[in-house]
Length: 522
Image 1 (cartoon, rainbow, N blue to C red):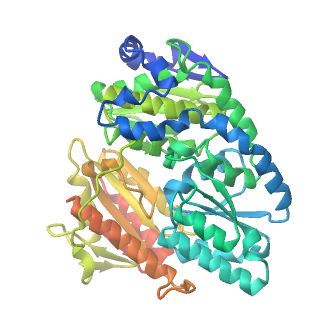
Image 2 (image 1 turned 45 degrees about the vertical axis):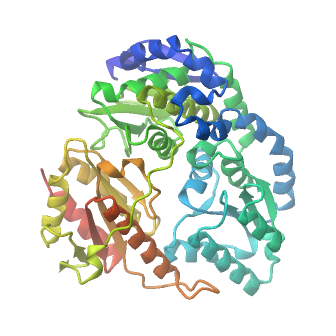
Image 3 (image 1 turned 30 degrees about the vertical axis):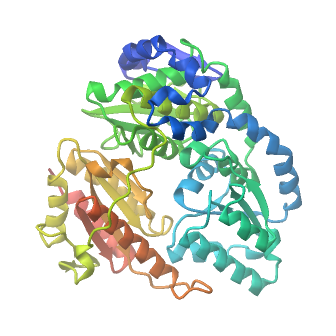
């Protein structure tokens, strides 16, 4: 156990933060001197400066959303009882709109099928799983993106073939008056209003996060109780774990530790790091780089420039056996969700970032790999950027060797996260080879403030069993290819290097890529 964890813990509502004062004590004192705990608890929009104030006025609803969300619990209970025969809950939406609900269901052990991809594999599998007993939840603040529109079209076709009334099988979570709300009215579907202005990971304790999880059977009332129990601590200078965590995160870059490794500590809530990482990336505008590590001993989970944060559910455990962490956060899920949001907003005060600013739009550039591959090795086509070696090993080495002192590698797989799950093993292999932070995610990518410091590896794969999009002149595979190409163009517009590897046979290509990455060394 790190020596940092032997110090004082900040505790409230069953949640403890240990080790934070070793790095953040001075920052906490500064925050307290400016009355930040009380001002944030009171939703003061001026905390992040005049430029950020207009957005903050509309987007601080997450602070007390758990109280407003309680009002919809009777409706959710009634809806769950009415639709009790629909025991396969599918959530469809872009990553920003589905992440919180996905993590809630995962942490609470409830089955929830999430479709935030255009890959035909998981879509075909979902459609084949009890279509007559499927409840489709559509989540979007405004309108449907093309992939989610395609999901709805595919399900409506499946229900037309099976015979159920589509209206009964669809629940929509969206803002009042949105394009999606109008479409739901046309379908005759149930609409549950989303919290205005609160989106992405900030929306965990709103309808966007709670409705899909509740319909999947998660005990969301308990989560709201856990968040409410923490509320009384948020305006305090001491015994405020959210303040302690936010101070440590805000102090990290000044101490040369701008990579935040989020590590499951073995005491539960293993999926929470994905949500917390998205929240930190949003709030700090790229000043902090969150890396979700597989385990405490994974490459990149510790080391120079890294603040290692262990996350778990069991209070008193600190971290699991053998885990070395700088900061440990342990407690119930609802308290975690409010703590991390408050901490991210607090870190943004110290770092002088706008926590609610969208990433700057990129001018689309040219995707240079539209022609033939630079080389073909086994089941992998290599599309190397100009100036990079044409072969697989050389191109990977070029990508890693080019990482500067403040740069990191972003790996994005446009594949099936279930059938092709092994490809996630690239992250630790490349982190070991690079000696720099490496992140991994499934495409399509959400816009990131950290693109400006990233070099990119994009992995695509051949589709052998495509699926038509009903009523559209394209297939799911074509839609997925367009998403990947759009990401490449956006990154080219930001002048970020992108190496694309296309797997002509997925299972063989993944194995080949892992073997090659394992042989790549600094």
